[in-house]
Image 1: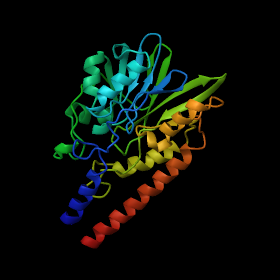
Image 2: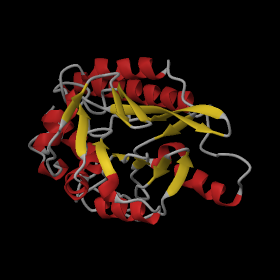
Image 3: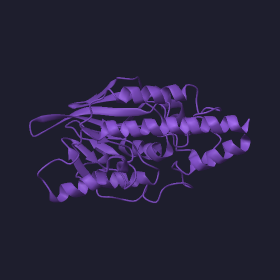
Image 4: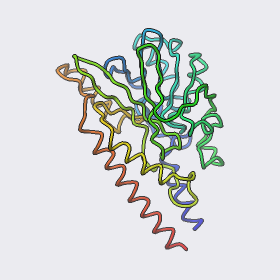
Length: 288
C-alpha cells in the first residue's frame, strides 16, 4: 500500500508547479492581449493571469509562480497600465503555479488581496493543503485581507466579479464570473478555476475531508452555468493563445466568444475524475 501511495504521489508531483516540477512554459513570457471589453490576458505562456480594468483602478486575477510575477508586471505595462493602479488581487486557487507570485505583486502594487475561505490557510501558510510536508509544493505566503464566501461580489467602480466556489482541485477553488459587453451584446465570462485531479489524493488518505463530494458538487454546478467566454488559469484549456493569434489577423469576430466550449470541457473533466477514482479505488483494494 505504501509503495502504491508513494508512486501515486511521485506521478502527481510531476503535474504540479514548483521549482523542481515546473513546465517549460510556465515562466515563459508571452505577449499580453485584449480579450473583450475591459478584460486582458497578462499571464505567461503557460499560466493565465487576467487584468480587469476600470476608471478607479484595476483588479488582477492570479499571480503565476514567483518567477512569473515579473512577466505579469511587464505585461501590464505593455498594455499601457500600471501595476500600482491594481487595487484588488484575486486568486483562482492556492497552488504554487497560480499563487506563487501574489506576495510580490501585492507588495509592489499595494493592493488588497481577497480569497475564498477554503484556501485562506494554504495561502497564508504557503503550503499545499494536505501535503504540507512536501516543501517542493510550497509558495510564498500571502496575507488575505478579505475572506470570501460562495456567491460574493467583488466590486470596484464598474468592475463586478462574482466568486463561484468550485472546490475539489483545491478546497477554496474559485471560478470568477462577470458580464462583458461588446458590439451591443452582453457575454457571460467565466475564469474556471480547475477540476483536474492533478496532485490530489482522492482515495484514502484523502487530500482533505470531503474532496470527492466537492469535485462532484463542482461538476453539478458547472453544468448549470452559461459561459459564453470560457477562460482558465492555464490558457491551453481553451486554446486562448491560439485564439489571440487568430484575432491579430481577423477582426471579423471575437474568437474568445465560444459558447460551445465549456460544457464539453466539464464533461471530459468529470469523466476523467470518475475514471481516476475508480482506478485508484480498485488499486487500493487489490493491494490490501
